[in-house]
Length: 98
Image 1 (tube, rainbow, N blue to C red):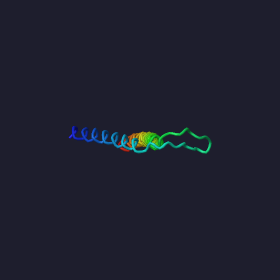
Image 2 (cartoon, helix red, strand yellow; image 1 turned 135 degrees about the vertical axis):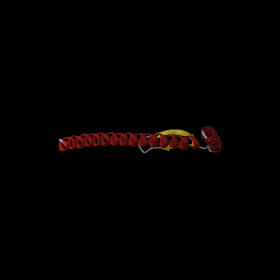
Image 3 (spheres, one colour; image 1 turned 180 degrees about the vertical axis):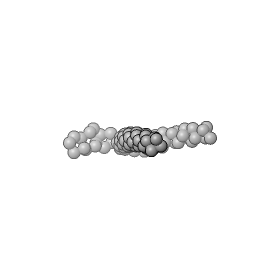
Image 4 (cartoon, rainbow, N blue to C red; image 1 turned 90 degrees about the vertical axis):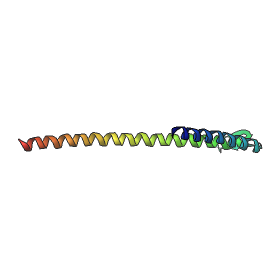
């Protein structure tokens, strides 16, 4: 099963590179990018689109990582609280049995 997943991942990566290459070859018209504050030099449309995709992927990964870290911290805090409550309950049970 593992080899199937690796094979599909490799196939998907090769397909993405091929589609990106074809996209670059078809979109060679150069346009400048105006970002209100400053203007970037003229580059092919494909470069701007692929750069926007890369920035979007990076922002998405960073956001996902921050959410995962926050979730892990919450889980850690809740486990500590659970352990503290279990210890307190056991100490209460020990007092009741004496």
